[in-house]
Amino acid sequence: MRTEHIRLGMYKVIYSVTTDSCGRTFALLGLLPVAVGVILLSLRRRWSLLRRRGLWYPVSMIVGGCIWSIAAGLFVLRCHGLRMDLAAARTDVIDGVIERYAENSREAVFYVGGHSFAVAPYRIGPGYKLLRRGGSPLKDGLRVRLHYKGDDILMIEIQQ
Image (cartoon, rainbow, N blue to C red):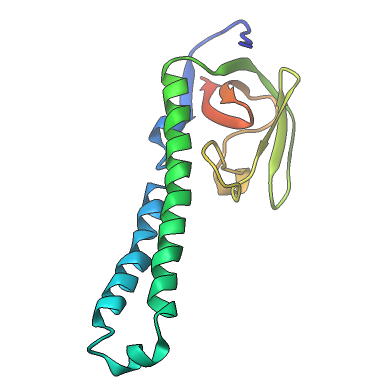
């Protein structure tokens, strides 16, 4: 369902999932324990301390790093899919004024055009996550255009 309201004035993009890193660095960091595990496994024959510890330590690093990289890779793929949806205009769009903006230490909740949105900096996944204490310009009475898919805010434009 595509919801569009009257678009008045000029808008400025303050967030877009296309400029989000989407956790690529986090995914690549998962390869670090894999590399260390492989090095420890290869040095095992030459280093008596590693022989006494057995195979569980380097193997668990390799397996854990692979699981980490796979999970993070799925996250990056999901983010890529949302970027493609935004580029192809396969998102819902709502234009309106922010109402009932409420923020606590964990999240912010607000309404635009009767639709509820929640923003949480600790939420895992792509999308807008910034709270006011972190520099978010969102507040009651601000006219915005939101591009979203499900619960993920993919782009925020504010009226100039």
